[in-house]
Image (cartoon, rainbow, N blue to C red):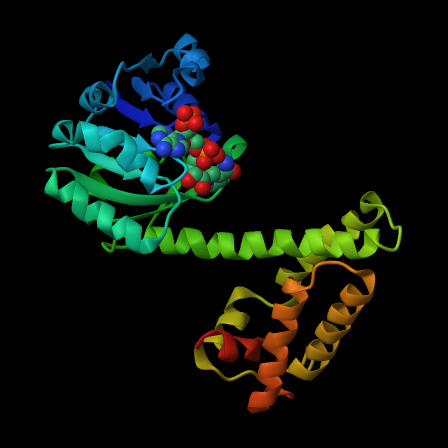
Length: 290
Ligand code: NDP
């Protein structure tokens, strides 16, 4: 059977990767990008470059957006809002859950249906078995397009609330970005003592993989969900002492202190709240309420 036409607006690294896997799966793909030259290679590979955003939206019932943020969506689609009626907009751009909910209402006002999405892999992994993408919005709309969206990555549908996919996306990047800052900070700490990054980083990378080795998701979830934090292998007191040592070492190295201050503060406050003999997981109790 003929594959459904798809429009893709936004040809950064992610948008380009999505166009390529959709073309490879046999979908006719129409593209539009603010900087038209970014479409050159894709046109050579079979995509059609629309002259205007309205033409791009008009070319396919399914319109996928891959932009820096939702402000970019409004810059592009507000002037083309008259073309949106009957379309499904799948926005795979980063923003806040509240902004995604407002965008869903905006699409409804123009007779379109809106799905929020968040792709959880970098561009080279789009379309591979490792790729997965969070979605939320109207269930019937998701079901209609699920098979096409699966070309990009395994869809994980979270429910009707259009903010939910964005929230899960942000939560994953919360983990990711904090870990990246940790890597950079630790590298600065060792570099201040003359240790080359190339020497330090292999063990640092291995430390990241020790988190899943320390506890399964189910074990962590039990403590986080119940607020009961048993375990004496890594108590808040022991981890808090280490956090204070990292802060002091950073101070004497003359490097940035914001990250170790935040970490030390979690443990100080958990211990002050009586969690000293509990597991490190008790820091959630000071984090969950501001
Ligand atoms: P960018 O975030 O750099 O997105 C660039 C796209 O947005 C380009 O098409 C750019 O147009 C367009 N754009 C930005 N502002 C405007 C504007 N005001 N008006 C019109 N167009 C605008 O690239 P990525 O492809 O890396 O990311 C796309 C989305 O995917 C982001 O939301 C990102 O968070 C998410 N994501 C990215 C991952 C990655 O590893 N790269 C991984 C997972 C998700 P132009 O070409 O003209 O500049």
